[in-house]
Length: 368
Image (cartoon, rainbow, N blue to C red; front, top):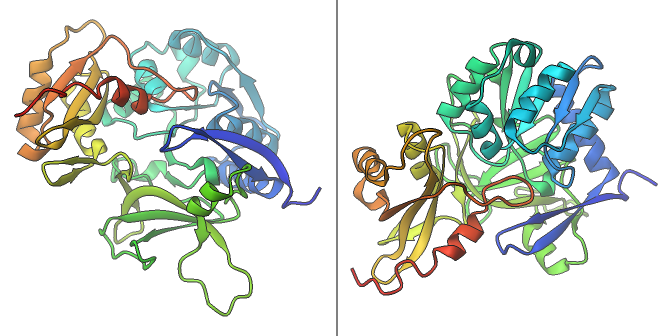
């Protein structure tokens, strides 16, 4: 085999909810392992506790990162979040990766010294980590550096926020990882100005070969990289993410929302992430998602589906009051729905598509 040959297929559910097989080459996997282990500063002495599914690119990355530096990796299939804490102490874990729903649960647990003191870093991917969750985790694991990351299955990892910048830019998804270039572009392919929202485009050695046996969807997502010299005989392909982001003057990126998840309400386009951040900051919920639900007069109405904090009563009115206090009127949710738990997809992320499907008829007969 050579570095361009197929090495793995990882399935992801994209905006359609249908599985897409992302074809990774040997080059993709080696470049990804080297890039991640470089910024995490992994060494052979690391003991990485792997709690994410290996079918998930972030889970597989725990293995490849460990292999790259000769570190130890402990594979764990847990039933309860507290099992993760117990195992961290048992194996003296130095690194743990998770997704926001898992971190929300782990942040609410007691971390005894034997579990916390050896952890030198924890990483988050698969969605924005709420600031209250991050603060609780830093108190629970005082020796651990937080790495907030963003990745595409089609390009393994894309960005990370250095721990030294977490307090300065807590809402940022960071800058490009080693061996990658991240561009923010307009619809015509030209580069956005600082602060201007645009589509995130990833180019470099981590860009996958495409979708398995799916040339149509491959051509939609894998397109020529912006700004190429027209004299080049072979076109370089980049991943056009479908995510809207903005870049500040210093090159740090900020997530605005997925283009297919933006809520279109009363003539406005609303980022679910911006609404969710306000709700998390209130401390009135444990987990929350903002969903656009069909509405006769508004087009879509904003609905919050959330779980209450442990050992606290559900209070929809208080959540709505917090939104009215902090958000402009067009971003205030029409309704809050509190549940005991939110559905997950196989990668452990909150299943937004399932929730949206369940709420589709919520305002069916509403005319106001």
